[in-house]
Image 1 (cartoon, helix red, strand yellow):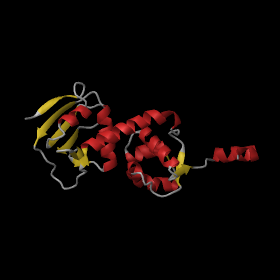
Image 2 (cartoon, one colour):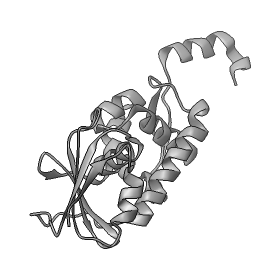
Image 3 (cartoon, rainbow, N blue to C red):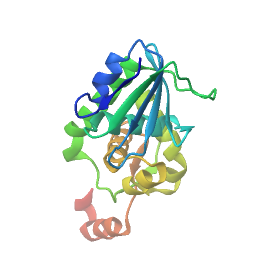
Image 4 (tube, rainbow, N blue to C red):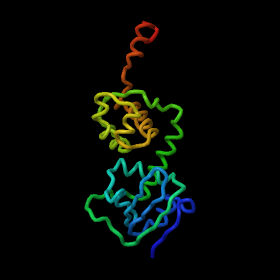
Length: 198
């Protein structure tokens, strides 16, 4: 039986819990700043996250799910039994995804006062972090970080929210994978201050 409604009466988190043991396609549309999206589900798993008939890669899928979890506008319909037409799949455990995205949102709120400026530049200074939460971002950001990039540039290049890019850079800096790039102004100030800048 098809299920339909709006996200203001049933947010995505509740909806995914309700559909935890179902197989089918959850179509979501009428969203602010998010294209129409289809989540293909199977019992206990999110098979894939699609936009414009194509599966999103993992980082974009995670970002889209994060935005959908926060959305309180939009319409949905669940089509039981529907399956994706391609082999490429995420196969993410639904409970783990919900926990991970809730944790990410909590971290954003907790660390917001400490996040770097959107224009602060970072360079590569280490290898890929062992923490799997940051590996996809690190892999995709790597070419940009080799030459130096800001959170704003990475947000635009990778198609993720600016605050999420700022959080990832903050975390990667603490893990030793990236460091702030020197700016010409910073170098001039250091020369002016001399030994007091150390």
